[in-house]
Image (cartoon, rainbow, N blue to C red; front, side):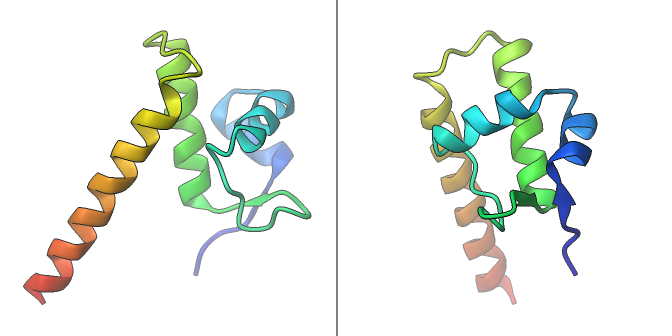
Length: 87
């Protein structure tokens, strides 16, 4: 069962503000499991932490974020596919 987290809790967990998370949603870097009530699961929280780290610690600009996220998504899809083949 996936945990469902509200915006306030996610902001604390990720050390960022609602405005920044809303920017991530507006840029379509992040897709909450419930867009109407802005509810996040653990995958969303991990993605927020990754984006914050890329921007704050590595100085990645907004233009590069979607490219990096796309590559990570492709890598994760490939890993899932390989796991399915091994079963």
